Image 1: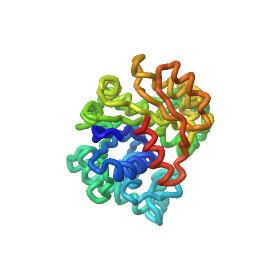
Image 2: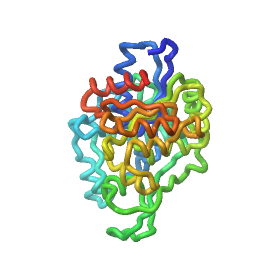
Image 3: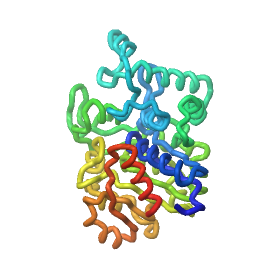
Image 4: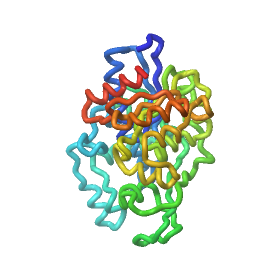
Length: 329
């Protein structure tokens, strides 16, 4: 690794971004223990539920890096109980398909208490991280609330075609199997980048777009005013990791999101979607899976330097190797 590569910034969604960052930290702990990592986290999935402010991606990154994640499902806490959610449901409140574990509820209660006491989301996140010690600086993309909604293309349950529902309802309740026509990030016009976000990009030696959803995770961060411009102007190298392997999403239903915005579900198409910085896009380099190596010539033609390596994050060792490949590229 280059000796001047000491400031690394990651733009992350939930599970994919969290697991990649964990591998990155493990690699840097051996190769560059002095390196500082900042993770700018998507907050477009955030919502109010049961009177609490829920931040799914922030919590997934914090728990994963802090050693408190449910490894099997990739989100939430291990050894959970759901007695509180059952009681809430008994009152006819909450979402039966989005039950919060009792341990997880404690995080949401503390965050909401801090927010209602006057703390910003950045300050509340810093406070929560004092317990989990994630080994990286976690920043929400914005302190202003931004919530992603989707416009339904068909009738479903008590919703009609043309209605907007929260992204989490489409994602969790309907598993993204209901057709939609568009995404709408409410609050984005009033949002500004949280303190430290733009500086973390412009002062970095390397910026990584990990294998997070390119539409509603990384894409939402990029939509915050100033973020895309900071990426285009930074002196740092910008490297992306494909969330698509062999024409399928690594995790989740990113293919449904890509289809909605008219992008093919392929490593090549997502690389072109981000685009080369030399042509007004974002990427200096793009890491794809070895099964997609046939796309390398087309990526080179788009002026995106690329390499093909194994991208399945099956364990910490494979994820660490992936992070090493990013630094090599």
